[in-house]
Image 1 (cartoon, rainbow, N blue to C red):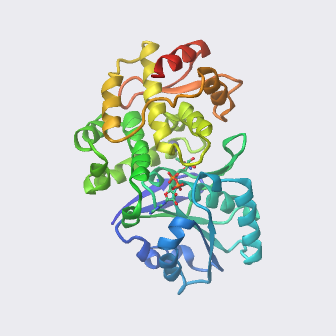
Image 2: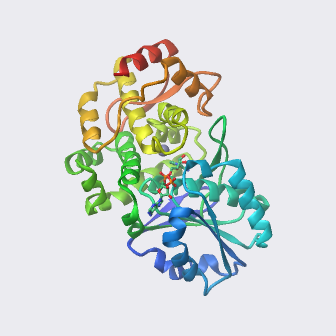
Image 3: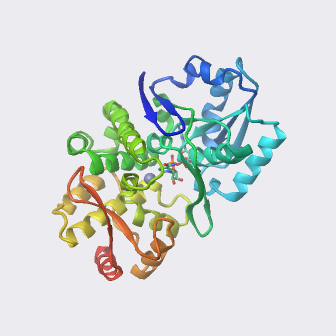
Length: 360
Ligand code: NAD
Ligand code: ZN
């Protein structure tokens, strides 16, 4: 098992990474659970069936546990599920000494974290990520839900008390979810570290490479990139924004696709990263061989072209509605070269041109 510490203003917390971490919950969290009145495990239908009972049995000797399950998928990050979970917290008698366990991928981490952030003005929670993507989302304290007018528009910063990342749970992930999560790993490499990027490019050339132990040693490194940025800028006043590389267009792609599983978060981000590189080249800030990058991502199975069927204007209007847009201006994270990101407001007519060029 490996361990690292995330430093945040309210509290520092451990991230445990390794096989069967889940089954060590009792010993790893003994101190944090001392004096707690009740635990609620929040999970989704897929993950609940696979791992909720294991976690419940680990916690059961220490405190009363209840399990709440929401449907799987992005649509669970809704006001309706949020309200239903708050009702469950009240019904089950959770109080300020209670603790929530977010057992699942990024959807559950964001949703259960937001319940924990707001129930009784905030109670503690533990992240138990079960997707590759959640190596990113479970660290850093961003929690929230979607509104039908946009993604992640309602939320709070609320750091977990601990992150238990059991890599054995990844073994049941469908290929598409491995790929989706790998996009965030690539993102960390692009914005932070040319050596890390080089290693990924040389060693990870197919979905099988992602799924096997090859990427395992780099999980900790990828989490450390995120943890370092969070330490420097917890509330996204500056450098944390670099983590949005690929997300400006990525969020618009996800929204237009309708959050129904047609496009995963990572797939949308991968297309968004390629677009941001093209923008960066176009502005003369970089010299990426974008076609080389596209070739790598396509070999891994990413659909890297911007989905057809929507006009450039529609993408631009959708990006402007994202919470990251300020006063209707579109700011992109661009990368001059691996490890050198910057923020730049990009004029609409340039985006219009590039979005039209990108459609094939
Ligand atoms: P997800 O939580 O929907 O999980 C993907 C699918 O895999 C779901 O159907 C789920 O039921 C299934 N699944 C999860 N674990 C499994 C397992 N071990 N075995 C089998 N199936 C399993 O999606 P995700 O990709 O993990 O997360 C995406 C979400 O994360 C988005 O809502 C995004 O906005 C959010 N996010 C948040 C942050 C943050 O900092 N808070 C960062 C990045 C992404
Ligand atoms: Zn993301």
